[in-house]
Amino acid sequence: MGVGGLFRDRSKQWLGGFSGTVGCKNSLEAEMLVVISVLRFAWSLSSRNLILESDSLEVVNFWSIVDFIYVFREGNLPADFWTCQGALCDHQVLWLDDPPSEVSTLILMDALSSF
Image (tube, rainbow, N blue to C red):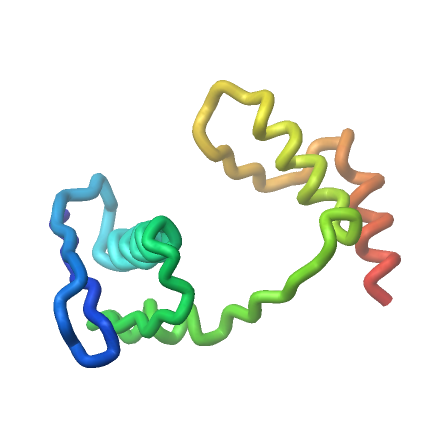
């Protein structure tokens, strides 16, 4: 599946572009991958004030319901634990449907401290 996009400044002047193929099962997956790739590329250019445009209403609606909240590392012990575990792994990002027993206590503590 092909993907492509471009970077422009606020006056619509060309800053860069990209195109390529991705091994995605459907167009929604490809569009989501593009958003993530664009954010990475913008970060590498030190661009922090972005407007993302997409021809996928589903992608636009998905990202419009995302709230980003800053928390101290100590305020999210389960995520911190997994970050440390990930640094020790030799595989790509792995999704788990159920939390392993070694992190269950941290998840419970985190949930109780949120109230």
